[in-house]
Length: 299
Image 1 (cartoon, one colour):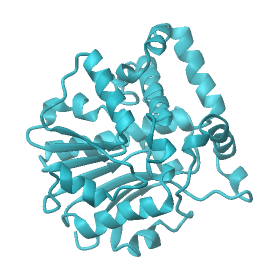
Image 2 (image 1 turned 45 degrees about the vertical axis):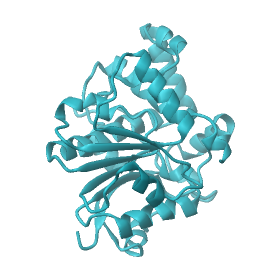
Image 3 (image 1 turned 90 degrees about the horizontal axis):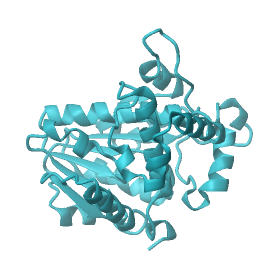
Image 4 (image 1 turned 90 degrees about the vertical axis):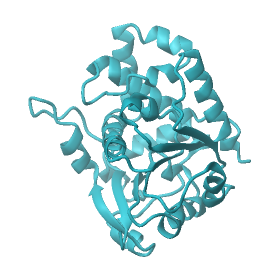
């Protein structure tokens, strides 16, 4: 088991923190729908976040250390929410959350779920902490939800899913949110190859990723230099390892017998998710992140 697999994810916790603060600041608006994110925070976080001044101060400090990440989390939550809700409304048989972290969608949208099986995959410490938080909050785990422990860097996704009751012959939505860049390239490739070779033709794979940033172009990408420096300082054990060169996503997918159904760069993300009712931009997104929705070439 790798060091990252021996403890619960700190980056997942900070994503939950951002979603929780946003929910308080934006009051359940389309920009901050995750009213359960607070459940996964330590008690002292929850206490201090009752105060508006601390909410604002923490939000600003996070944005100073990681420019464009607060806004990115707002937009990413909305993008993945859209796919998740659509899958439930269409009553597709399965949803797989790869590296689920403190994802709350199975609980926030439980009333929409008629018969869709949901598989949440993550390392065991993160899952154990998540279940403990849910229990303390008196939130029951829906019967359709299965927690499936996995060591992403050492276990094959196909083997883990086959033991969990997953059916490769049924249409499935795969959500790979905030995960790809933390995997070594071999593990990321294995995940994409599994989707390409071992899933139903109508299945969809939604993920976010980072483009490759070099010393030569790091200053051309909003927030990237400060972000990478802060990651090295605060999250050195969860460093970025996997990326896709800018402008090469179509070829990257084509080489894996996949096709891009939707691609959003940082500016697309801003226009789609961060324009308020007065046509003002809430904030910029870190320039190295991308969203992509992928399907089979024959799907």
